Amino acid sequence: MAGLKDYSNSMVARNRDQIEYHLREILKLVGEDVEREGLLDTPARVTRMYEEIFAGYEVNPADVLGVTFDENHEELVIVKDIVYYSQCEHHMAPFFGKIHIGYLPNGHILGLSKMARLVEAVTRKLQVQERITSQLADILDEALSPQGVMVVVEGEHLCMCSRGVKKPGSKTITSGVRGEFRSNSALRAEFLSLLKQ
Image 1 (cartoon, rainbow, N blue to C red):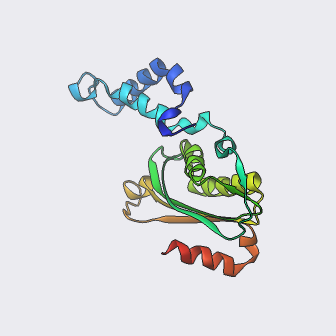
Image 2 (tube, one colour):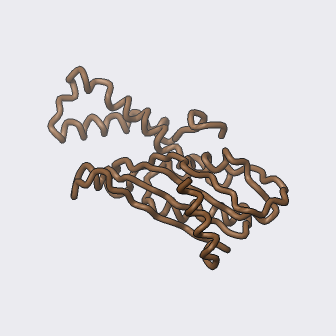
Image 3 (cartoon, rainbow, N blue to C red):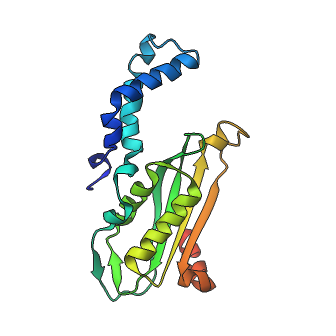
């Protein structure tokens, strides 16, 4: 997987006709005229979008990490402000934000771009923010065997901002801690302090 454009959901592509048919039916059921000029190509456009935004189903997240490098660095490594977009599995509404990942290497480091690829692999499917946080922490903990991992995910959920309680601008923050980060409050504080810089 070289980049976002290089992978997509092939199941969506194989089922294109059925998906487009059902999208047209949904448009009719909500009261739309599917023959209206602005909607003629909407089912096809939405289906193409599904190929991209649900591409995470085609990827094993652990596989995107690739090789690690032997390096004697045993100090904190942080990749912050990784922008993500996902879809809430409860309402199929978008949620998005930033992910911050820190780990304390144990003789092995990861190529920095692999963090962003991992985020894409985990978020490009129907999700909940809490699961994204845990999956990222677990995958990195297993793949790197670091001294510790900490993941902080910030999210703005349109299912909460644009419907229901309608509270735009509200953010949800979740964290996942593994290894040294669980027991070492100074390490957690250092990570959180560096995020503010």
